[in-house]
Image (tube, rainbow, N blue to C red):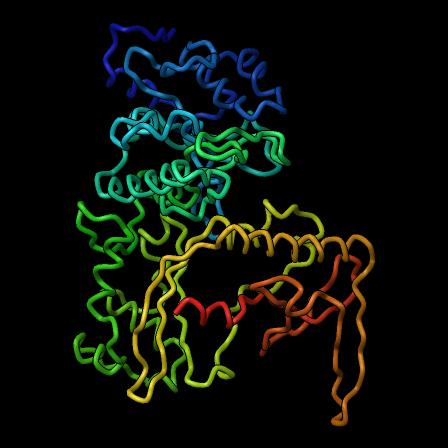
Length: 461
């Protein structure tokens, strides 16, 4: 029987942990002891407690010292899911430690409680499967985690962004999209039940915890389990992600697309008027990447960073709103805002906007912004989302179908129009394929899309 003690080496502990790999939860120890924990369906930490108590023989407790106290090693158990493509992704963010607004701001990053915890963790990854008994879940990997050196500058920058907001009395304005790899996620029951005092403001703030983002954990897991290699930017170890982006793009600022092509020695097969992907392809070229999908690059994936180009036309009327995917009315009907795709798009995602401007001298690279939605934008988005949810639940969506002079059907509805909230609007998006979806009540409905208004995009310049 395994007995954790101070005489064993860290390697002994890690070797024993590795023997979990391939086991089902029901096989990690005596069945009755395992089932005692896993039958507690309302206990979110049941799987972690079962592994800690039954396999490692360490009592479940909430004391502040590390779980493996003789080796200053924290046990973290986290779920992985398998996608339809057979690839793996993290099911959730990895929560590290609670943020104490009253004391954490005094610590520099290297000496912070966060660093003490995140640099010494034993991570146990298990496969979460829908409609499978929890006892049948399989353990995929057990590994000691330390922050990769290449990620330290970015995580340090993330930490300072969070701490600076606390120092500025803006803990209530913290958002997961403020940062790149490290996040300050909400923790608790929500709905105002977990508000906390902050030292530099009288306004209470949501209870939050430091965490590694879900996408960060996905990339990390695949690097150790599938040995998956994806294309990456060659960022020097002393630079954060944002510093590297600034360094690269600043060299091309205020140059025309033609001048950029010449500097890169790039001869595109199609011109900008022939290729909608011309500008994204050009920016990718600047970073030494082929194609248009910068967000497939490792560092973009880790930070859940999406890449979009903005082209400002000479005539304001020619500018375009920025679209997001078609609206899923079934999701809005069933899912609360903070669990929705809309929330993920704007509260948990950061965007690299690269702004070009049409001039008499050509299309000029004017600006780049690592952008995340400000608090008032999220409030507007939530208002819009909840209004549509109310309409769906109260049979308040009306459809008016008429025929125009050409004999074509014209569909109108009473969804909120432009101006209902700032920043956003809802309208149909051109579709070459199917133009229709269904509402939760089964009615046929013209597909609608969420747009970020062009007026706001123009204001970024």
